[in-house]
Amino acid sequence: MSIKKTTNAVFPIREVSKKTGVNSVTIRAWERRYGLIKPQRTPKGHRLYDENDIEKIHQILTWLDRGISISQVKSLLEQPQDTAINESENSIWENYQNDLIQAVEHFNEKKLDSIYCQVLGIYPIDIVSEKIFFPVLQKIHRNWQGIFGNQVIHAFFESNFRMRLSMRLYHSNRNNDQPQLIVCNLPFQVSEIPTLAFSLYA
Image 1 (cartoon, one colour):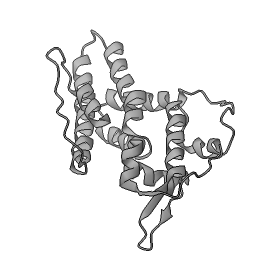
Image 2 (cartoon, one colour):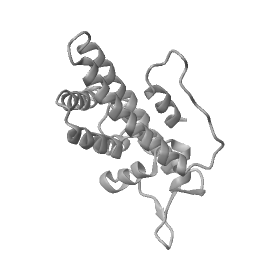
Image 3 (cartoon, helix red, strand yellow):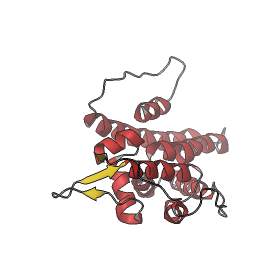
């Protein structure tokens, strides 16, 4: 997928993060680990991105949203947009979901930490929440409905997930100079997770 530059304007990584919704850590990981983006550098080594880079980030997000693994994206960016994809679009997310459920079943917090670090290091939080975390919550609720221990398993994962979202939101707010948005649960909402996720998206 070829992209033509249309402007000479360049932006620091913080501005690119605001424009694309992808945090700076993830953008740097896409550069260092996968070579997806090659920003310009100032004499002091600071990254600068042009409109071409920003458009490429949006294209990366499109592929990820389709369920394509990050390791495949580079070759796809270089192909025509209508290139057929042989891999099942949902397979990458299902694998992560199964790994997460297995860790939750065994109350393996170390494994949970490993999965969180892996997926949040290369995928934006909104995609990870939509494709992995929320489906896992639904599966846990459905699979263990009415079975002894269901509430413990559900509470274990939900509390862990809530902690992760809260940490992300805290660090995001520290670096945010935009107008404040006040968000709270509605009276009928039991879980804080959807509210935290929305706040982080916003």
